[in-house]
Amino acid sequence: MQVINYVEVPHQLHCGDSVFPSVIVNDGSLTTQQECADWVKSKLPELEAKLKDTGAILFRGFPVDSAETFDEFSNSFGYPNFTYKESLSNAVRINFTERVFTANEAPKDVEIFLHHEMAQTPISPSKLFFFCKSAAEQGGETPLCRSDLLFADLTKQMPELAADFISKGLKYTTQMPAEDDSNSGQGRSWKSTLSVQNAAQAEQKLGELGYSWEWLADGSLRATTPVLPAVIDMGNEKKVFYNQLIAAFMGWKGVRENPSSAITFGDGTAIPIAGLQLAVKLSEKYTFDLPWQDGDVALVDNYLAMHGRRPYSGERKRQVLVALAID
Image 1: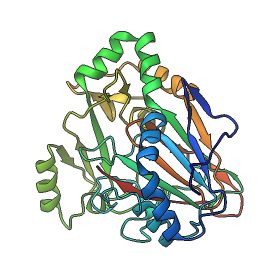
Image 2: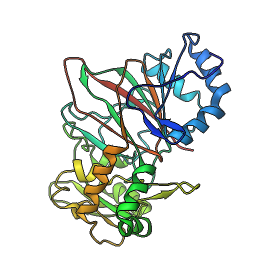
Image 3: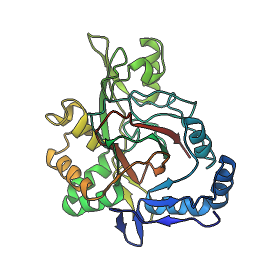
Image 4: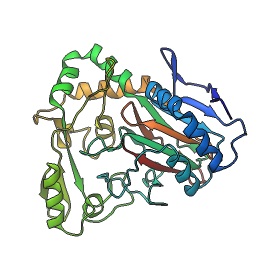
């Protein structure tokens, strides 16, 4: 496949001269991992320009059918690896290879709301690779949302709130259980999340990262981040709503009733609920639900696009794997 074979699919978002997401279909000429790797390397400047413009690229029909071939395909882009083990994510995952793991082990009836991967931590990846090993019978789409378009719209409707997000940043408070809880989308224990063996090591790591914390009677750990950005300036007059506000407001326990229990501005003041509700409403306008097919691979710019997971049903196990990169 000498050229990049872009195709249009239903419900793509039209953003100026581009569509979101971009979709590339193998014409059948790439049949081995080596052919794919050579093709990616030869087309990398164009692929990276397209990703920077649109925020997400779906690769369909490529010879990727296992965690190992997905590892090879994602590695062919040459981005530095960002392993799950070294992340501060408290989502429960299962590793397949050093760089490949499950997207989320939350039950299939649980929705994972829109977020930028690990934006609630001081260390987050810049790019995400998703691989659909097995699509769900019904549902299970991965919603992708353009955060630059969302923030531009929010700025028009609530300019003072947008200015506060830019100037004040955010603090997140999360509670990590004493033991892993596979029934929760955020159920990774503090030992697993922090990659430590005991409380003293946990406190040392949190201190190094600028957190404040409190140990609770049940052995769980409540930790509050240093001030993190709510908005990132990407240049070219493009600002992105880079945070976990929608996921926290919609999906974290008790946050819809009392957002300040988990999220505040960086100065500790409360975020107006009306502003959080507006962000949720606007996200629907700029979201494309990716309908997975077996073998699909999606490359997502973690700064430009949020992602999530729709609930799903049926006997077939939905299995979407992930590899992270940081550059």
